[in-house]
Length: 314
View 1: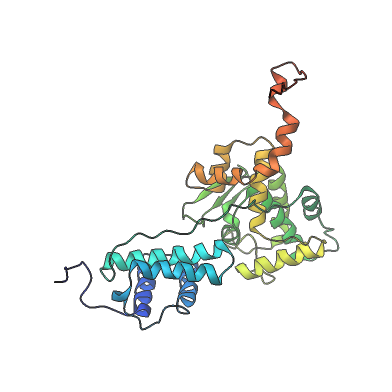
View 2: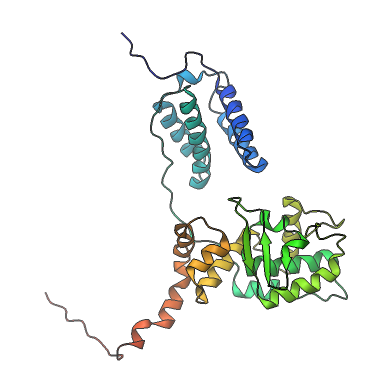
């Protein structure tokens, strides 16, 4: 006799289950970007799972088989894990709703890679102020954004949502209200950055302080794609082939550490929820800091430099 299990007697299809989770995301007021990310993942899932497949047919082996399928069709382990995380989250929702039985799932192990950053020589080129008598507003604004991204480490979403009223040049801070974890940040800026913004605001031609700090050619809020395209074009125009807005965040963290910045302060500025995330940044910068460790050589500060001979014994 078959044992009773905590699975709903009324099963639904795989596609209906995905739709239910998207509705749940909307009810929890998740950002549209997050919801779109899940929808994109579901498009990938439908290539393997039959949309009409009943959720009651899903077992632990179903998940394991899909892991093998992804690993054999996608070379990038990071992309594989991205899909798996979305599937795991969706499966957990179905488990809690009683559509599928509980079983353990985990993502695959991936090798950690060093973080890409801008080199010192690239930064010198990118941070070179344009001739205000000859350049267009877009180029000038890109220069200001480059200064801002490099000196604060904010994310692109935060950057395009900063308003003029969020800039406090009296206290040299910028209030960042749109963040990844939805917790507002107070980001300190240097006097140099404050001077750059003070000059920029004289050219911004904003109507009210509710206008966005950085805008498109019509003075409206930047979209993510427009923001990326403008900075991509800016880099290329200066002969810098490496591009990427998030690369400035990595560069800021690297330069902060190399210049003796406090790790706890870095965590607060970056808006990380815990120190472990910040530490992960530092760990991936170890290869870059190896030369610094050799140059500083802390041992030389406390012991007399001597030549040591190693005795080799058979």
